[in-house]
Image (cartoon, rainbow, N blue to C red; front, side, top):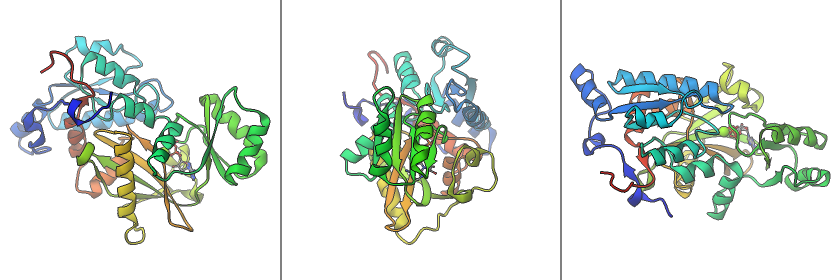
Length: 351
Ligand SMILES: Nc1ncnc2c1ncn2[C@@H]1O[C@H](COP(=O)(O)OP(=O)(O)O)[C@@H](O)[C@H]1O
Ligand SMILES: [Mg+2]
């Protein structure tokens, strides 16, 4: 069944879309918070990105509470999701990243429980977590993404691995199809490095994505909203030491620069925003997401690398940074996202 605006049940009562994101007077704070009922911030979880998720979740929890929302932390690695229903939660803010959180599984469980949740539904989440599936869908719609070769564990030979640099050229990127935070990713500069790179990615996923390397500017662009209302936020340009935006440089060094306004040549930001919104709609994303893009330094053509459907929400994360550049504070952003909590399908008997 196609998931579209008609069978998406918005969780918020009508005043949710007109209420201000927050207010300074305490009675206003309470009234804004009260419309959401009892809210679970799902954080932690079982993926390799657990630690980042705990940071995202704590930030979101604090922000929601500061706006008078009756919010509680909930770690699906420690508790059964069924408890959400028993404890009367009205909606969930998903601050989980990676598998069992961003990949459609938790979304599916919440569909069954009938509890509206932030972010994309089951199908968009499960497609977007898989970089190969995402590329197939983007390519089918004529959206640009780097050339690739898929190696499936147990189904490729040494000759297949050796052929990859001939097909894609060098350098090239090898990464697990369904991992995040640059985990298991290698830039292969010499054909002799292929076997080790493939072996490393294969430890994390049965599907190994080998991708043409795009040399040039790296940018990321968040999208807020759903369907025809989806809008891109300002593009952020990322300048990592030696162009190496790995796990270390993402979270633990101060030397990576995040530039917003991005300072790209005139017109390029709008082209990227337009492409990212098209990709977002193509995958049928909902609520919010963030697309990672590389711009070829010679042709200036932008290429989509991936779409993150549950992006980082730490105080230093990119979506909050871009939102701030658009005049939306971290707290406002959390409230805006919570307003978009929804289910894919309206359940029988539901209001
Ligand atoms: N094809 C590519 N060309 C150039 N750089 C890449 C390519 N693929 C990944 N990278 C680099 O690796 C980083 C992580 O890759 P990405 O595909 O976004 O996966 P994830 O963020 O889920 O680990 C990117 O932000 C970029 O710096
Ligand atoms: Mg990425």
